Amino acid sequence: MLQHNYIQPNWPAPNNVRAFTSCRSKGFSHPPYDSFNLAQHVGDDKYLVNKNRQLLPNYQNFIWLNQTHSNICVDLDMIDNVIDGTLQADACFSTRKSQVCAVMTADCLPILLCDNQGTCVAAVHAGWRGLANGVIENTVSKMPIHANNLIAWIGPAISQRHFEVGKEVKEAFIDYPQAFSQKTEEKYFTDLYYIAKQKMSDLGISRVFGGEYCTYQQADLFFSHRRITHQAANGSNSIPTTGRMVSAIYLD
Image 1 (cartoon, rainbow, N blue to C red):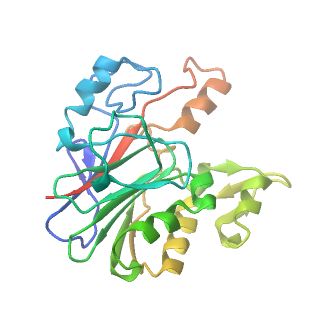
Image 2: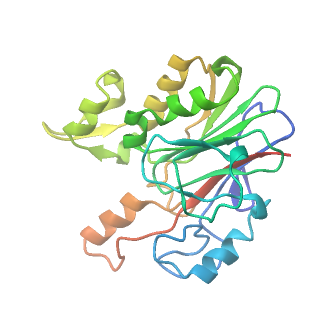
Image 3: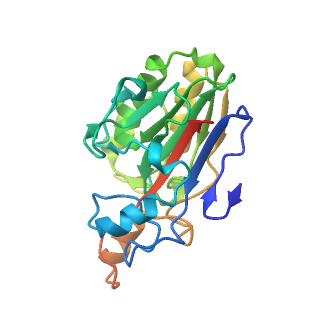
């Protein structure tokens, strides 16, 4: 469901759960970050990024992670007075009212989780490395909720049609052959959405929603690192850098 400059999950979450993914427009950043870039690590003007962040719902309760494609998940309820961007993790959870769990993406999967009673929420940044290294499994194991009591929503990410990878990625997901279609002897197209859904199903999460967007293809809505990299390689005027969206969830 797209409302204003945000996508809201179409899922049966409890009424006190607030969740959204930002889109790329209606912010202050200049090209190539135009315009609602929320990342401070991509070379954008820090003042403009801060202005963008202050447009977010409940912006004062965000903790911005330093994402490194790891499988690290942190309990935000145990953290106080952390400086934004210094907490190294690719997932987080909280049971505290108004505490925002958030991850930034520009092709990777953002996964938001909550329980049926609306007592705990989590956000996961899952690129192929994070998926292979168990970021979903590690997050679910740390949350104080049994997996079969969780609901998941997968936000906008790159679709299989546009995610070309080499053999090393296919070998990392040898248990998920259905996620790959072969392009050449050395290249494949990978369905990250499928892998994430299967992993969550294996954990006991039966209600998984989302997965209908493509960050690469829908350039009017989303930043895409791979799209801008391809444009630069093809000789366009673009440079291989771009902004980031945020996917966030919290208890109201």
